[in-house]
Length: 152
Picture (tube, one colour):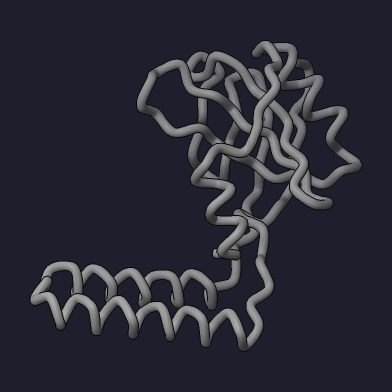
């Protein structure tokens, strides 16, 4: 790759949360808390409350803009370099109108890297990744589907 490809994108897709979503989160939290108190499951009660707080904080926190660069060495995500040799393949996902490149790790329990990009630069990004990694079909896994359904 002779030149670098750079772009900026948000770290995740912002999901809309209306009043019903917040009321639902509150009702589920209260119901699970009452169940935990009734059964004497104090550790579960703490887990429910901490989970609800974490979900609320992540729902209210705006995504950061991250600068991405594809170069000869790998994908530079902010100041973090993901080397091509850490991955076995990549794939492209389309979620609604948003595109992302998913880098699939070689190691079994390593996490994949998901990078959003604007649709106009997709061809150059796919070509740059394809020069170093084979392309595979990727699909949303079960956890991603749950997160999208719950809009978190």
